[in-house]
Amino acid sequence: MSDEQFYQESGPRDGTMQPLGEALGRLEKLDPAEVACKECGESYMAERYNWPVRVPREDYPQYTKIVYETRIVGGGLCPNCQQAKAEERRKLEEAARIAEFAGVRRKARLACGIEAKYQDQDFSTFKTDGLAEDIQRAYKRAWEYAEGFPIEEGGKGYQSLVLFSANSWGVGKTHLAGAIAHRVLDRWTGEPPSCPVRFISEPELLLRITATYNYSPEEKPYRECESDIINSLIAVPLLIIDDVGKRKAQDLRFVQRIHFSIIDGRYKRMRPVVLTANLDSEGLGRYLGGVNPSGAQDFHGADEATLDRLIEMCRGRFNQIEGKSYRRYPGTSRDKGRA
Ligand SMILES: Nc1ncnc2c1ncn2[C@@H]1O[C@H](COP(=O)(O)OP(=O)(O)OP(=O)(O)O)[C@@H](O)[C@H]1O
Ligand SMILES: [Mg+2]
Ligand SMILES: [Zn+2]
Image 1 (cartoon, rainbow, N blue to C red):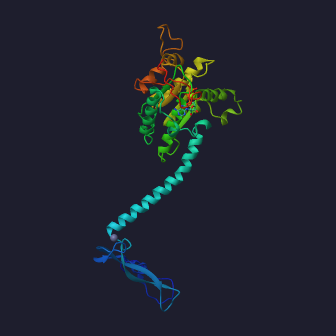
Image 2: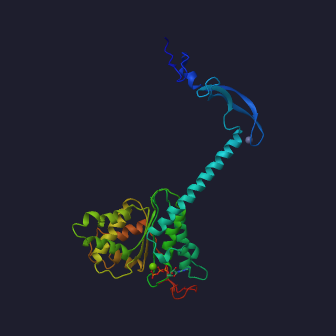
Image 3: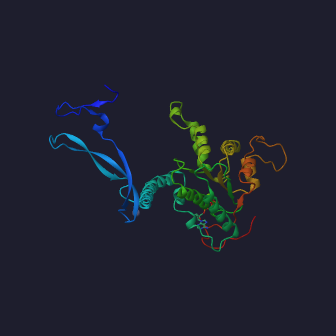
């Protein structure tokens, strides 16, 4: 016997053995032939095959046999129509994926830390007409920042942004910081797979960290600890910390240590941060640590040079916004000049 494998089709024992390939059917390429496209009617050279099909046997209908029919590859469509169909299918699949992704994005928006009051406040609800030049500039800067944020690269290498007002409240800092988060989420289509933005106010951050100190030894293994919180804030592509220095810190040393861990962690990983503050740059330096305007020995130690890092991360530029409070004077000119 040769090497050819033989196969006995289960069925009537007529004693014949067939080569395996024949029993299963062999695809045979035929010469191309000119046919008319089913879609556009244009004639084209179609690739054809002798195609094996299983059909019931006439003598024993409960058993099958192989017959061959001529088939055209590509469903009888010319290459152009095939391409158009594939493109149409791809678009439909993409639209379905984006529609499905809208649900993920909605959840991320609620869970990323944007407070309820600012859930509906984005660039579209921020008025600039007749408002101070500072505010118009800050709006433009924030918009460009959000548009340019490299989401798919996880924010790597992108610059940071500080919006501050030294002498004003209610000028739209939190609104703009939230608008950046909203816009980045609008642009997010699934890469990276987890939410690319975290929005947190400084008071909330400090509260969450101090809460970890009060867990009982039994609770501790199941709760997040300080380093869990800090590491998650370092890892997110875009971190927004709102209201830095708004409240007088009871323990400035502690606040500085936390800010240093976060800012330094992000600095080393080349990830940006957006801060809003109610302090001027000198006040921010004193608050965060790292500058010493009086020239005296730095009371917190020169290693905590948070401001230094922040200045580099912002490419040397902070954005000041001063004006009347929008809370008190909505929609009026708030231009009272820079402090
Ligand atoms: N230009 C604007 N257009 C529309 N709404 C605005 C504008 N500026 C501020 N607001 C609204 O005014 C309120 C106060 O603004 P926001 O909280 O952003 O100010 P802030 O600068 O963060 O204030 P604070 O210094 O007290 O933290 C918010 O409800 C905000 O949506
Ligand atoms: Mg605010
Ligand atoms: Zn066609």
